[in-house]
Amino acid sequence: MKKFRCGDVVPGCTRAFHGTEADVLTQVAGHARADHGLPDVPAELVGRVLAAMVDA
Ligand SMILES: [Zn+2]
Image 1: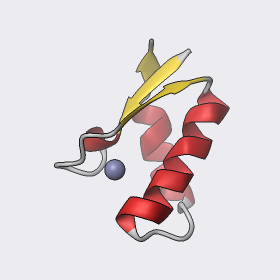
Image 2: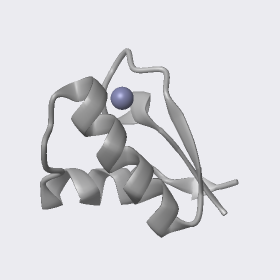
Image 3: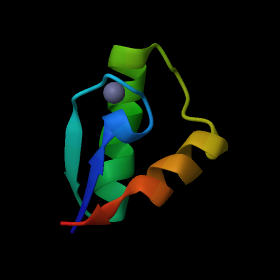
Image 4: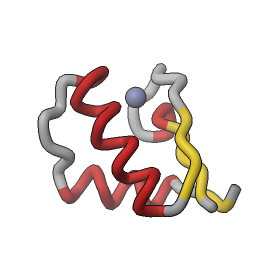
């Protein structure tokens, strides 16, 4: 299981996500679309999300 805090990539955001790496990426994509106005998560951002994920 992994944990990702959106605030590690988007300063000020307090959302956090838990699950498998794929689960977290799916949740982050939905959150980015709904709350950050990003219809698509660019590969560069996926890389930053993966880099910021920690074991949970
Ligand atoms: Zn966020």
